[in-house]
Length: 218
Image (cartoon, rainbow, N blue to C red):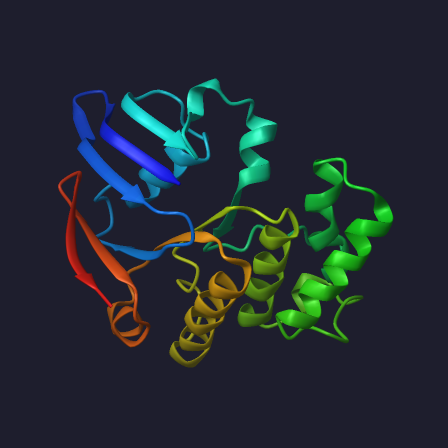
């Protein structure tokens, strides 16, 4: 599903990714660990084309990302960020529905799917609240529901528990693993939270000095 071959990314004289190679099968769940600045977030940005300038090859489902229109790529890939990226002036339901509106989905289908996902992520009854009225864990659940609305084949999560307390972070990791199995997605989770990685059985990768190393397969 995700094929990365000999990918290098430089910022001036600094090499952030140094000949990275990675293959994730359809439906596979994997963690990517590493220190800050090791290149983890840069790699995700290359996958969903926030960054286009690199050398090497990246393909999604056999198709080079550079040949795919961004709107098509965004249908295949959902992204969850550490900072949640919710619109403060929109309700929980409106934030989730926004993903469907961007892709031109019908209002009826978008509303039904958004309500289902909010129920699935434990947010029933909070549809009309605004992000500021939610806890950090609840805001992240909204972000997860929004990412799943496009029914992506791939879900990328960039430090999804970085702003959460330990108990909420543990719940979030287990929820992501559960949803990944339920929806059959390929999922790559970037995280520093080693203790939770060890508690959630999955393939584990480590990034250091711009390279990826396999360190376990739970």
